[in-house]
Length: 100
Image (cartoon, rainbow, N blue to C red):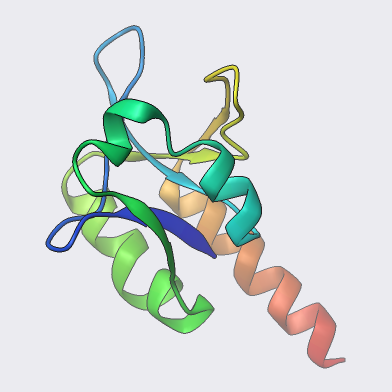
């Protein structure tokens, strides 16, 4: 998993309704393409998140703060917003499937 991070904080986007969205990508190159000029001005760059850390720390933290997840955010600033509970279940199901 990849997100955008400054030296101190993960970037949280806001959608057109003002809802907070934590964008994530499956590859560094995709995250880099969506690190726009305003993010780079803050010193943001792609940063890796281990799957374990993402599932066990990041998702619960974002759920507690009512932050959704923007999956596959693209260069047109479009994404698929997913609830953290659904994203966690999907990842855990995929991990269980891949172990079988």
